[in-house]
Length: 439
Image (tube, rainbow, N blue to C red; front, side):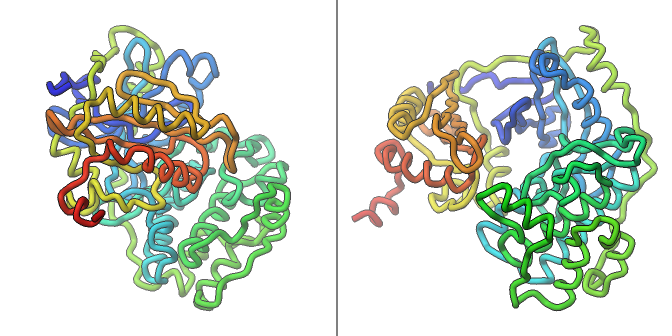
């Protein structure tokens, strides 16, 4: 267990920990060995893609991201494939999600909220000018870079203008219920631009209020509130912001304010900075076509992993906010969808202890090498809670354990983690300072 492993490599990229996952894809942290640049690699399993007939959707996602070259949108660098996988190499954004900022610190001051809203509108306006509609805008899909600037991510549900039908409308109901426009719910066709704008309005409300404008545990009641735009702004929001929110959250898409009018709004214009970037770069889809032709001539080499992933200082720093390593193993990580602790116990023992602790909490355990997938058999607020756990080797006698929500409700994840951590007290490494505090 104490020896370092040969890292997993995909072509020129050295691959590390999992930083996100969904039904059909995983996202891994990686490093370009030629220039040292950190990247995120989205990995699709080809068999799943073919089985669920997702080839066209993934092609569309790639083409969409290649169309959008904007400072407030996560960039796509290249696309590769092996015999069994498809790899999308993207910009690695280090500042976390806007969602975490809101949950950890509550509502924002108007100047800060306005800055993020301005950057969001800049990105969305540019996407729409290229015929791209996101369709799942929410704080969880808005990332922050090291400078604190907003980056729109996750075009998995985006729609290109070619999908618009003869009536000029889109007809796929998708997105997250609390942020979805009433015309999307009503399923009579909708304009992608005005539907995205509604979601922007909900995001602005959340930034300023600290809570959702439309929320109810009963889905039908929630839909009724959205359809009639039944919401109330808290008293601390300024009149200018209230007025703009009301114009965006108009349940009639025909009367909803447009982006061109938002750009002229007095509240919006305060301290506004137009994005500066080069739009001239040509789009090349040759690598996309090569990936889906599935010719071995275009395959990259992929090495497999068998031991706990060894983590270097570069990755440790990239995981720590503000490059402060003191935050890295902070026990006080409330309301995040991933948390970490360190242990001096052997990796096998850590895995066994987590398995022993999770089963009495009602979780089914799936084990693979030094990773665990925990699935709650009982459905919660947002379906079954799934938790991904992985053990990393930091030093010969020190491991870091990452516990991450893979699916389900964030608050349910925190309740689970508190119960789990109680059972793992003898596994977690405590410093001398920790021991003093416990006395």
